[in-house]
Image 1 (cartoon, rainbow, N blue to C red):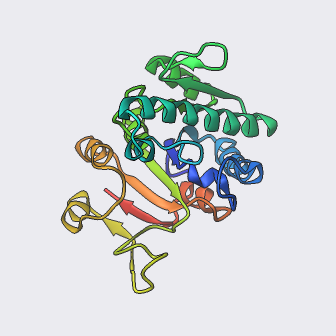
Image 2 (cartoon, rainbow, N blue to C red):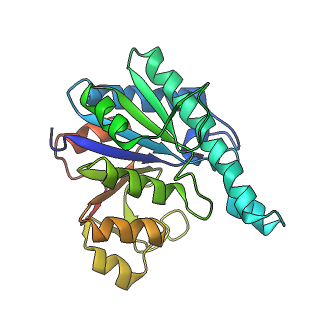
Length: 234
């Protein structure tokens, strides 16, 4: 395997499948099967899931809700998604641990860095819930922060698009894909890879990012085997 320890970032919207809201159990199970396949081969897997399929703090703020309150609600949505993914993994026989940045001991462990790393060393899939535990930070920022803390080799951002393009390929048919980019090129071209806080964290800590299509079966395994899938930023 090319990478020993990875941080997989999944958007909340990706869990909707073809639905317009909520969680598509078939899609979550598909992701779980992909994760199990690489974990079985010895890859240490940590995951951060967004909450946009249930609640999005920024959207709520625009409708008049207090931003901090809205963000906390969004964090709880990420825990719901994390529990769904945990259930799917455990259905497949994968040992998992859900660690939350907000304490809720009845359903998950509180986040402790050393505990998270020990779980990974023991071969458990670790899911980080509740973002960073602070308002005004996105789950992209949580993914970058947790990846640095656990000394991950790479951040894998699984999306429904197969990489980074010059423009949104779903809206611009002339958009062209990048295979490789430097952090400076992303800044100069003002490309939307992750939010700026998350992207800067990765840049300053020399943590590469790969944006790829998580919905295509086998892509995650191909990345672990060293295939040129998606777009690499380093």
